Length: 413
Image (tube, rainbow, N blue to C red; front, side):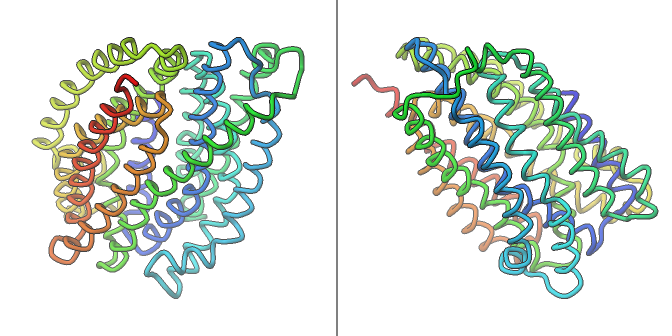
């Protein structure tokens, strides 16, 4: 809650300082590009690490200690790739050119160290979460919005939007430092006896899981890029308006979906490692019984009070009344996504715990194809609102497919 609230305040400050412009569009596109690969790799490593450590505990085998340096190398490679590929990737992915493209590339290269920091911090969070040490892993993410807010307040008048980019970079590196300070005193827990070797079979299994999960995450992460490809074809400000409209949704998804999913995943993995299917099912249904009714109530409140929420959060400084009306309308549509998206997140956690990564990949492919199709059908007639509706419809389809796959994955063999 604290971290997501800080992120919401950061968006309020950003909106007040910079409003809606071609420059803010360029920044949003740059953030989307610069965080794509790190999120894919880091999330896959963290997810696979939790599952593998659960198996190691159940089998009384050594942990995957040899992977530490490989993860560090992957993080460094990720940061370099973000910097080097920015000109080509930005020009190919997004329908922008001229000064806007040059500005977006500049922001993306400024953000490239964030790629290194994100992979490391996500991996370290996975390490802590595997031992049910959620507090520092969760709170470390507080650093990035705090440093970004500080940079906006102190340097927005002189550096412009570039201040927000540097704030994100410093915040990401601060997260790595905080997590390192938490892990170092527990070296014997995570790296018993100082050993840095593990069985080649277990290493191979781990990286196979990372590869499949990375591929699935990469496919799933294409959807926001596809959205922005279509948004870039619309009038100036469409990218930024959708970005603002998605923030309340992102906050609620973080509270009701991501946080619950992160906390419950190690326990689901323990059940799966012990092959306790009944326990896995029981825990899943109990979680769904708490989270989904609450999400339905929140959906109703956001839909009814959408314009008031936008007015309260953003209507100041350079954020105009016309922007309030447009962002409020888009946010109403996004609110309809909450129940389906959060249920889908929980379903994905169950599939990951059940070692059904192939199903996760198929769901990701279906989601991207569905999202692109609905974007194409709706963007001209509805503008940014059509892109939001495409996300809602995609979440519905993905949830239906996920439930069908869970029934298959948990079927007695």
